[in-house]
Length: 315
Length: 315
Image (cartoon, rainbow over all chains, first blue to last red):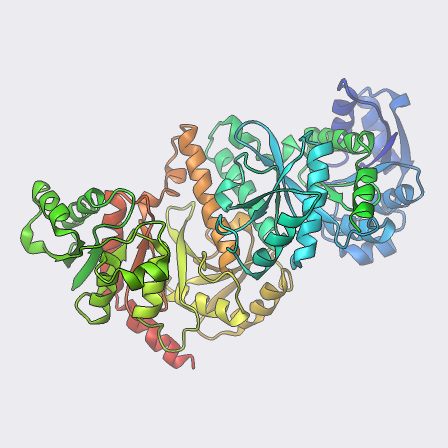
């Protein structure tokens, strides 16, 4: 398998992307050829300096970079030689099996939606965040920001996508799905939650366990929690801020540490035809490593095929 | 002034309510006669045992109690002699100037909306939560749960109510108001946030500072943050859960401590004609004390009159 990595994306590129490549190749599970996309003159010396085995990667030169604050659609259109544009071109044409970037998030979204396609039957691809559980495991919360207004059917699809992710990537047998809500009882919540509850409950592909509240997100009653992207994004950023506060206040705690983006890297876009992983701008080596591992897991587990089958059957 | 307190409400009533009365009366600012509503036979001996000055309170006997899990409307209707029903009766008839209970939240809501009235012009009364800021001050987030579906106009009203609360209770001059959103730029967010932004910006009574994200809630850029009650409730409960986790993990930190409900007690219902404070079921003495102090501040600052004036002018 070939995994494409944007070497120019993120606040600490390309050095931290190189560090991530090195860390990945040192892991026992490393099983991919890496296609490193970026300014060859900047990247090649760093790879050499890091003494990375040249047979493990191929460099694809990209003469342009899309800046973190550029307008996504405009930049993607005008900068055809940017690392992100080239990455999606390679992905679309089967030259790579997954694409990772910690660069301009908007450009990654636009590239995902316009270069590759949503899987048949998926109305709204989605992004998620890991939920670190108190017992050491992880759950997944989705959507966390690209679908700010949702219909009940969208939340049901997020539940299916999240379940497949939990099963094939997080290794959960029959993942428990919950609806994020403001009360435990059925019938609670806003109009969206009230309308979504029965759809989740009746869905044959889902192991629906009911509502969970804000206080339950890190407990183990659910592996997959669904909500619209507005609430999900607020939750994600609030959880990040608690981690930041803990760091600032010099609180050293293993559990709070797990809210650090370094520990997982980025979010896959679920519901599209190929693995795309969007990294946090502040990604460092460990985050890049984890994103490459996650891509590899998504390819090895044939997650995209599982999603295709599920949505084909669900029609 | 006379402040009514439900002695039977909450998981640790009536003993912790008695403790709260004692703590309140020991504070330098205590300036209210307390009307203690509950089972006289249960309450009187505890007050005596606590050696509380009998001239500081009057007991109003209530022969019934509404349980924490009873159906609110049904219980209020059938239990006319319950402490909550009597409390609202006294408040409606001017026998007390504020009413506090840590009992059945739903019954407190129903009592508030049906016994006393919304202030003219207020479409939706609201509840809030304090936001502990990193600099030691407090802001306020609203709505946090009674208005799960909102229109833009509702959020504007929450902003006005929150501003007046911040000004008169939190002593903020010209409180800064922000919209909770999923991006900083104008135009970001779901349909509700997009439609609300210009209304907040143009409102002559508001010092609107723009959008804030989930990560900004505990920073100082805004004193008042508005959102619909679904997101607000999820935020509140998530923040509570971080506190719980910190306690469970034996993290001792002054900042995280401020997410403890003990430090503030309960939430006032804003936008109704008299001060009503709804306490957390797990309230202990310190929380009861703080709720009594807050009632006294709401009365002394004439907050309800300020709200009436504001909504009369705003028409």
